[in-house]
Image (cartoon, rainbow, N blue to C red; front, side):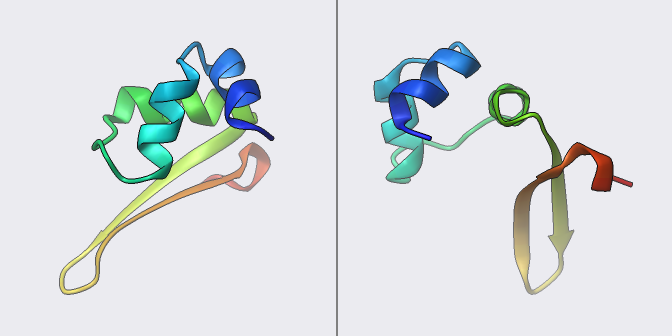
Length: 64
């Protein structure tokens, strides 16, 4: 999927997707939710002491 396609599906701009891809901004949960919706995926966030934060998009059928 291209940045332009993801932008259209998520209601964001291509420039916003580019900034996210290049680590130039910190996404909010609301923004991640929009991207998950564009992918038709579930959003899983894990916070582990000493290991940091992991964010993953999974097939919505796999979410717990």
